[in-house]
Length: 427
Ligand code: MUC
Ligand code: MG
Image (tube, rainbow, N blue to C red):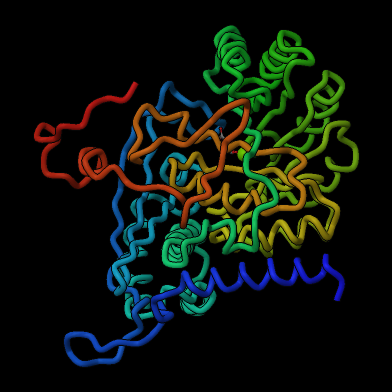
């Protein structure tokens, strides 16, 4: 052996020895069985309780979508407590009660309490595949509720193993995500001022405009005026939330595409898939599917038919951070672009989405994970970090967050009296 090899061997073996020496305690298997108070053999990672809490939080301004104007946002917070003392936290959030999706905050809470919890209590929280398969076998649809549960299980397992959820999902390939902002005040001058402010703050340089509620020519003039004001400093996109019929969309997509609009989201009904195919063939700007995807199987059918060039990925509409990666895989295989979408979740749902999105090979259309920034209040101990146009994704175990119990107690819908709380408004 030459001197170099000898020195190197010595270096490696001394490093190995020091790692072994630091493991003084015998290895403790976090998944081992133990006897509970009644003498029944249980896994240390068994699910002991599931709590669902509805929280109402104000928005910074009305948020006007084609089908609903939001004056506040309602989150369903899920706490999964396990026998080893670990707690996983998840969130199931939709927009506008039943105006957007087919689950409401109230149905999510009722269904988790009544139908999900009995299936999960006593099950191994550490085996996310098995737990979600158990739900899948007995519960159809309900992807919003499933997403919150899957997020909570991943959070618990990440905390248990000391790993961020992104690492449980195979490992991150980026640490931060560019984030779009939605301009949805309904007023052109206000929207331009808001966009300018976001550019100055270096918070957003991608803007999605909510249209479809108004008369189509007025909507188009509104979008074109905003694009003209922002020019090449920003990417401008529109979300029609299914409001147009195909004839209107054919004309409008041509006008939008020739006026520098980069992306057209869900111009027509999710039920008119053949129309989406026709639009996607002729529109000069790419068509993105959002409401068209209510489950992973929808994504497969859209890809097969060529009904969209870009998919909006939403954990809530696929059934969780693992489930959304299946839709992403379908898109990747079909050459469809990816966009990290939101149901305007608070910090928990936003981070659950972010941990999935940082694992993707490509995310060509970036994300819209701005939900927490639309709220005037937070129920997390530390706010999410938005800096230099990006959301920075925590590297700490689980989702990388903790609840502010006092604020949660103040904003939960079922609390006894708001006047007894000491919660204060955060600037
Ligand atoms: C949607 O339809 O995309 C996402 C961002 C936003 O402003 O609304 C949501 C829902
Ligand atoms: Mg949309």
